Length: 315
Length: 157
Image (cartoon, rainbow over all chains, first blue to last red; front, side, top):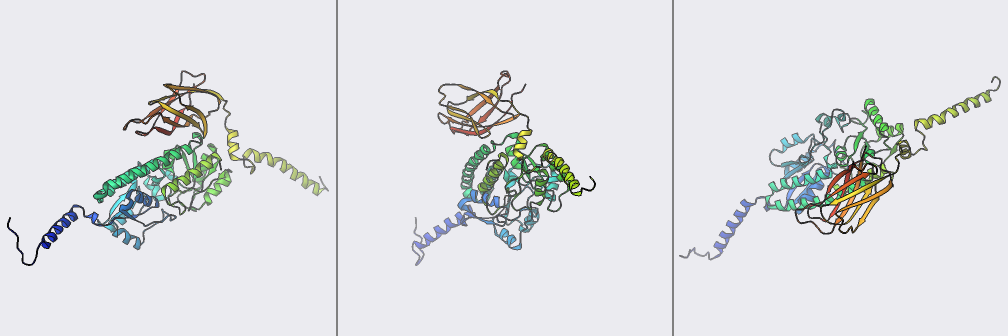
């Protein structure tokens, strides 16, 4: 083979050429892996935890909503919109919870992938009767309960789904996402076993959950409860018709306790408690957002302990 | 009585007091009553009965436990070669129509990969031996431990 003679070059030009070819090939094969991690902006504290568990070290998570904020009244600010635009992924809870999401999608254009974690979960639909007690008028009109995170099996499905979606956007880490989701799924299995064992202490005929608003549909479906929400659409707007129905159900079923909610005004519930003469339990976390329980595990453990102690009378 | 205003007042107060306390009790709004206790007292009293429980496992068992409402109902350790474990428990009160047990079981060895162990729990009410009710509960693939709830309908006439 004839020598390639370039005056004054030597072997360094060949090395540089080879490195250039390899680098270019790598870039086109895996364009995303040239970045350190996927940037994921999240719209709900529970999906923030989900993103961290599934993404692991391959994601950087930017929560746009912090634990303790009101999920029904949250609207992204211009700073939030800028963060969302610069992220690779916007991870929403979905099922119509984020009423501003269609508008936000339009603003983002195609630059950010939008994933709705709740798409993986079979919906609880509100019947015409239950819609009276939905969390707010917009969600009552939509007839789908958006509070899917109350279902542990739902969260497991969401983890698998989100892992698959992350993997489409970052194929080089597809297996890592799947592994993380499976691992977290095993931890959620243990949480589910513990939850079912605790709840089995409550007789099935006594499983009535009296709460401020209709946020526990998925929990009730999963653990064999019937929901009796008290408040109507919003504070100060509790209809006497709603109250009468709720009081009737509580008396008919001899429900012993009602549960207020963290971050909610307990006025309507307290008046029911006083009228019917039942106990006031500890506060539940209804909307998945509490500064005292920022992880999914902490949130579920809190609620289950409160419900079991409230309905069994145990301390 | 005329001329005795204080006495009249005392009689009126006594009358209302006599009417008030029974009414408070009837409406259930007395602050001293415990709602849980009131609920239990209002429920029809269920007599204690005898039940047989039959447990059939897809894999040999090392031990099995059955709990009801947080209390241990049945313990079977090292059942040996019993293909079907049957135990009678007398003097228990199960008033529910839908009964939820908590079952924990350990197999003698883990099932093969891809295999899921299953346990059938059968409940027979004394005097209704021809009407057993049962439920199957499943463990996880390849795992030797089963921990789950088991919902069964009360055997009825």
